[in-house]
Length: 317
Image 1 (cartoon, rainbow, N blue to C red):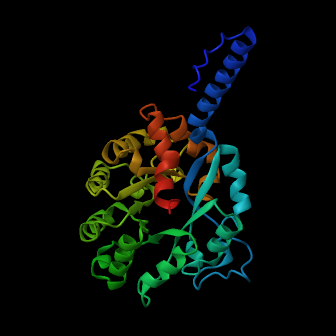
Image 2: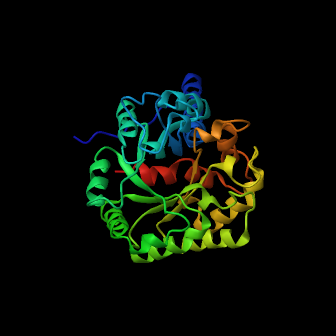
């Protein structure tokens, strides 16, 4: 026999109060979740790590302990800056004085699973650099720092090793991360034309303004790279750009131009620690510029720059 539908009973005063409390708690929880990226789930897309234990992790030829300033910058020392500022994940960048020995970075990543992604360093002139890239990728490395010989990057255009690296980047979803000056932008453009499927992440705004002057020609050349849809830019190392003084608001026109050219979904904030936390510079001032200091950034812009862009490039499978 088919049952008659049950008529809902009227809400009692107790039911009404209970429902209202639950709704209020749900709204509060939803608001907290919406704002979570701001305080509790930001990603620092660029920080270095090293240890004073040079017996276990020796410095490469040409470097000395005097080059390690500060003498130590372990994950725990980095966390003293990241945790109070709501940063839960970090992209570790292989330090130059270890050169192609990526062990300390990899060991740090293993010690803190889920916290770190990595940008490694391989020898483009060594045999089969693409094989070394894939080996490091199995350890959680998602990008590779490339740095041109001075004075510019023209040699990249004829380097078989560099071509192999860019092809491997395209095939395996690994990013090329140029540490360059504006003079290298044309070479990067030619590589992007040759390898259009390769992700690119340019460090530190391409060092536009590193000498204290933000030149229109340099900024225009950097923004021109936005025509390649897989080129991204780190808005980072504020201590080293423009006036080089907190709260870094003199960099607002630079960052706005980058946002307008690339869109926030191709920009990512990064500190460049430990250099960002020396002298008068602080971690809070660096992240604060993006989090609170630029009124032209929407809440969605900040979410991309403080988390989602870096998550997409460095923390996705």
